[in-house]
Amino acid sequence: MYVNRVCHLSAMYKKRRTHVKVDETVTNSPDSPKLPKSFVFKSGHVGKSVEALVRDMRRVMEPHTATKLKERKSNRLKDFVAIAGQFGVTQFLIFTRTDNGTNFRLTRTPRGPTLCFRVLKYSLIRDVLASQIDPKSFISEFHTPPLLVLNNFDGDENHLKLMITMFQSMFPSINVNKIQLSDARRVVLFNYNPDTKIIDFRHYSIGVKPIGISKSVRKVINSNVPDLHEYRDISEFVLREGHISESEAESGVEATVTLAQDFVGKINKKSDQRAIKLTEIGPRMELQLVKIQSGLCDGEILFHEFIKKTPAEIKSIERERQKKKQETALRRKEQEKNVERKKAEKEAHRLATSGRTISESKDEEEEDDDDESDEEGDDDDEVDEKEDNDDDDDESDEDDEDDEDEVDEKDEEEDEQQQSSADEMDVDPKYIGSP
Image (tube, rainbow, N blue to C red; front, side, top):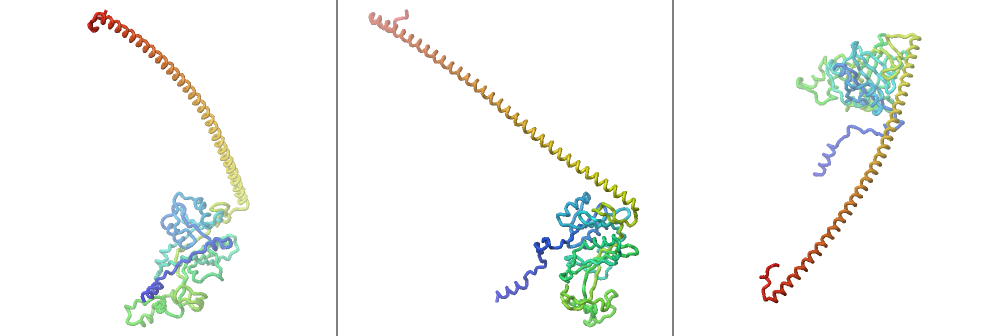
């Protein structure tokens, strides 16, 4: 019984993985499509409001963007270009601010082109949510990239075609046959007005709701037990009038779709009839295209909205640009030659210095050897002198010993003579005085 209960509890509290690990062998294979990745950052002093707009645009570009990118005042565009290749970044979204207003640049790394927009108006995410009656918090919607909708980009102008290509490259392409319906959680809209030449940018969340029922019943179905403390019966909650707002009213058969797959939510199953509901997340922007540059924030101006050039002026500008490129190439070659020459001089100086040092060290060693040999000769002479002195001392000691022996012999002879004379006179020799 105890074992069964433990097994039952382990089955209840078994961890359910909420994040599926990406197969790196598939994503890193050469046949797999390259995902567009982006850096969204500001350049220069822009103020707190534009900084908040940068953070909101990072939310739009999730999950394939650097959400915690920190830029410094000392950072330049070349700093971001230097690390873009390491992280596979394909787009830069740059916000700047001048005395004339806020500007937005969309560029493709590493060689361009660059679309330069003027931000006429913008609203932050917090402003959009504050204008809603029942704002919602969005978390899981940012785990997948948004869908892209381009509206009214129908002109034959080259700048419109280039804008379409640049906007499409911001987000991953989708395969209609393989896409999962549960991954379509957000949508980004670019709406072009050909009369005013203004582009409206919007960001929405995609949701579905049951059709043919009121909001009260839908709330009972989607959520748990509603708050009924103001009603005597649940029928009053369901049948109350004037509860549905204008924005939540059913819009007819055209708004209904049949789900091809299971969608998010416990009641949104395959083959069910549902109505599509878009909820704006923010931010909003009104953009006006100013110019298009061929390079990464520089290069030839392919299009300008306010300045028009004649063919002669275009040719002269192109000649000046080619001349500057040639001068730059010549300076670069000259710098490379100078670098090589300095390296050769440094190497020659190192070799010459190292050779002289070796010869000097050899001469010093030879001088040291000569000094040592001279010192050894002096030591030998001193030893010989000491030995000669020792021999002389020995000879002098021997002569002294011979003299002492002669003196002793003489004393013995005198003692014998005194003894003999004392014997003859019968007198003790000690009383005999010295002669």
